[in-house]
Image (tube, rainbow, N blue to C red):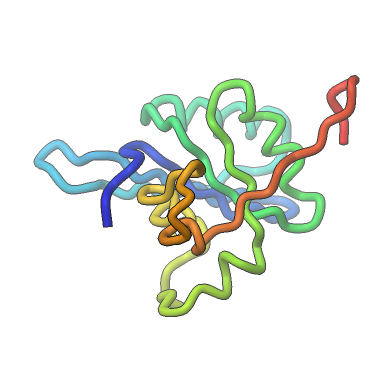
Length: 139
């Protein structure tokens, strides 16, 4: 499978915590995976954005789970390309390793998937959702 993005992150969003997994090129080739946990307060989400920026992440993928994704999405949307993925489709991928965390899995998927891919191949792993926003920036 061809690599599309080289600096990506997957976020596993919960009510009180966000688990972030950044996947970036290693100094000696290959990729390096770094994980970190952040609270969901405004200050902590700013630290998350800084952590991602420090790793030069350009694409962030996260599941749309309940309403918990909203503050995370809005904290990151101005600085990163953010993909909101259908949680049902992400978790029901044949062959998914069950010992891999959701954040790692989203990072791995986004590493190879292009949102504009119309081949029906790799993009079948993750269905991207659009985020409807009204005129005042709210859902």
